[in-house]
Length: 384
Image (cartoon, rainbow, N blue to C red):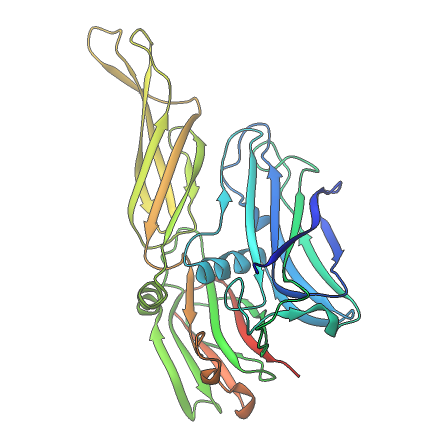
């Protein structure tokens, strides 16, 4: 029998522009994953700067008031979803005036939806809550006031389901949040209560290429007595694409004019496209054309001109009006992200035995200042 799909929250529109909302989860059931759908309406002019995942400050699953079963910022959850699903999460990213942006993210308790070995038992806790902190920027060129809307879905095994061999669940949490400095190492001590499956490092600075702020990553045991993993940031991203078979394409719809810029959040770009959508006729005074003018790390600058064919000779002028442009950007690795697969996702007997170590650190070799860095870990919480 397939997983059952239970709607826990159906498009709950929040009346406040920011804050924290707490949704109580069921008291019984065997949950493979939760899904979080977020909808926010753009401002009356457009929105080319803030994404939905930037507007989500944190998503957490809290048990019995204090036990953290999952805790990530919106951008971290977005990148973990990209890894787990091997492609960009479903995201209607549009800059259209008063357009509705919608992002769909999974909160996983197993390695994949329908994992028969790893899932969360609601019955193991007296009270479970999904806690979401949000703060979209409100402006004519950002988001519209009081339009943040949440949907929560629970994917559960039926009560009479047989053939399950539960070995625990996956717990993904943020470990550190720091900004890089010009040089030196940032050593982040990792938790050791449970075995580890993977580490995810997200580092972004606007207009700075991946691998500049942080050049290398190392896993260090017992203050460097043993180093089981070391790699250059760029090499790790290449390996991530290869070993996980990840599709690294960001795309969206922009409402743009000449010299506008847009951050794709997909770095190390080697292929971009821009298609201007406009219904033109033979007698139109201006025929618009759009190109990507420059690429600076993950930022695209657009060149939009209007060609006047009524003149004796074709005359072009830089556009001042906004046009609908469909854009796509393909790069190396998940943008601004490096994943260290410290344990095996396929064989749960080959996870990284962090509890047996006296100390585990993730070293970040820094080479430039200004990179906002978040470090998170996926742990295997074994069934009691």
